[in-house]
Image (cartoon, helix red, strand yellow):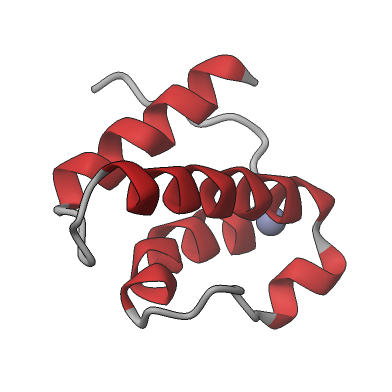
Length: 80
Ligand SMILES: [Zn+2]
């Protein structure tokens, strides 16, 4: 993986590292103080929530493997 260090704030990196854990709790909405201050991560979470909702409709799985999240995450990063 060639993840180049952009000007992404450290808090964003840390938040995004934790993100799969929030979804693993089974919560429909991700609540995190960082989202109140960061539009970037708010948008990312909205996208992920949408994708997760679609995935739940398509696949009867409740805990996607880390590899699935990796793919979703990298796809979003490429898109933006
Ligand atoms: Zn952020």
